[in-house]
Length: 624
Image (cartoon, rainbow, N blue to C red):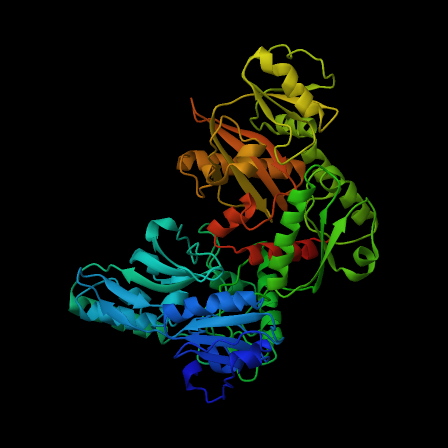
């Protein structure tokens, strides 16, 4: 396979004045190199992508720190680039992007016996250093190409081992502020092919701890791994294309083989006969051809097995089948401002994925020209009112417009807490006892005792929610709830561990626990408690059995209301006996980068960009 470092493609160095039109005039830090015509063919092992791109190479963390404020001030989006062994480029010039590469490749043994490696060092260099110093555990990872930075970010692994098995601590660069920070291994979830390190962070260095072992035994294991890797297909590639699905399914390679992927071809790219989860570039391939082949492979598996594979290769445009997405936000409900924040988050993520995105602040329930004639997909990010009760979705359905999220009937049933409770009872899903009131002067319903929860029947974002602990608080709680709805919901109060779990494309995401300072998760706890409200994901106070039960109940709820494509379910695990109760659902959950569903997705190794892209593509695939 041709190496990116072996290419002789020229790289054009320019000053910052030339790149940014004179907006930055300070002298370039010594040792830095700024390229405006960098080549994907020269700088990635796959060689996919015909458009030039901007690349900044820096020799040290200190230089990187000095660049970040200037780049962000210039309005550029900064993306880390490692050795380029797991990356597909673009055929479109990304004028608002700049890729940042740290060239520091130092590896050393520390006085305490641990090893420090900087982001630009090849992973193999670290492993050789550890092996030569009498350590074991290095062989399984010895055939993985790429740099320390990239390997850590994706939690690279092979043969049952991952790089996180040996990580002790990390030094990270914040790509928004330029500040460095030290993190411990325990600060991140470290799941399969995912570290949990966000896209706004760049790995600068890491400290590793390897166990002691026999040099002879380790040499033998290295030789075995070398022989195994020698069987990989020849030619330019980025390694395995897809992650393996959950352990209950066969590996991605087996699924692709059985789905007939071997021999598939698009342009210069083909799937070799030796390995169905592999793509080889035979010369001159475009990123568009590569993405088309990936979509064909993915589609073949989905059509035959109903299993959605996720790409392991980094490429924001990987899964696109449409180009134009209209993000609809705002509305006229009490949750308008929250909707605008969510909409901006979705629009930004979709732009990062390469979609042509327009934003629309909806002020009345009506279709627009953009919805009917421009958008290939409408992405509603509306909270409350006609955006969440199904009326807007019904308009889209009548016009035959493809859109993201549950259909109008599901939205209506989820938004109406009474109807949602009735459906849960029909399905045998445990939920707290409840009653409905339509009189602001009504007494406490028969059979209810304090404390209890009062909230509007059809509203979200915890508006109007009150914990009533005694009779003196009853009337004020009713008045507050009736401010938001003409129908009020009274519910049994259950003390326990609260959480939320998303269902996306028929699969549950990890559970996020909601730890708040008061007795109830109300508006203040959700939006005004700052650091006092925490959202650990995975949950800290649910047993594995309880988490499994939460996932089962959540999936049952999603199926019952008909919202398996997208819904967030709020749950509570009762403190006294561990029983799981479903509280309610949300068919259009918050979608800022720090909202609950994106937080859950991040823990599962799915970025905000991947999450929003997958929802768009799922809408196209399941077009109503």
